[in-house]
Amino acid sequence: MSDREEFWSIVKRLNGDVNRCLTKLQATAAGDAEKAFWRRMYARAVFGLIDAAIHQMAWHAYITRKLTEVPFSPDELARLETIAEATADHMATSPPDTSQTLADMEFAFNSFARVHFSEYVLPTNDPAWVLVQATAALKHLFQDPRQVRGLAVRDEDVGLLGKGLQWFVERMVDMQKSCYQAMLDKDELVM
Image (cartoon, rainbow, N blue to C red):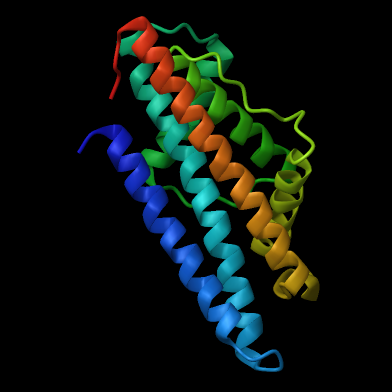
């Protein structure tokens, strides 16, 4: 299995988790105590998919950079190495803050695109970026619950998470298409 196939296999598997949680959530009665449980599971599944994609893109950029001879600054290379080591070691770390999650997301997208000769840049100026910012804020809240609110995933949170995840996945597809086209144009397929 190529790195690209493995990447999409992971995304598809984790997206399956998201869908199973959402199905269970929707099938649970409104007053049922299990509803809160399935909201939390849905939120965690969304965060798991986003985190896995960020780390897989950064790891792929790190290992592919030598094959494509794409230059990275010393700071960028150190950042890629840090993410790659954490991914390779499956290290458990405390959850990053919201701004770090967003910065890592943007960096992973842009690095992945660069090693595939694409000029794709994550469109953080898109008005829908606010959905991803809100999703990252919820991630921080729910993964580091120091207040009761951190344990209560509301219906409106579920809707926001779904919209944020949809935007994120659509951008991954856009980026992959851009990378594929750039590699065809350059006549260099990097798997």
